[in-house]
Image (tube, rainbow, N blue to C red):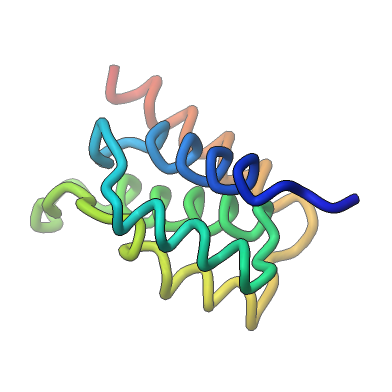
Length: 109
């Protein structure tokens, strides 16, 4: 099934905005990158998994680790998108990450 560019870009940007520590609005640069990812045929599932993995890595750090600044751009996730493209995660791992992040949010609330 082919996906429309507009639907793809909106999906990617909505997922991005829903993440912790990301801006409340997307920039022109974020929109351009989302469209570029569409043109490169990067599956939205890989992007979502990259978002989950990067967020888990950021949020589940040791308590004594130095604080990280907020994420300011969709470009922050490019290395993780490339990592997952080269080395796909095992089936079910995105569900594990969702659970891990949900557990983290419950503990921090």
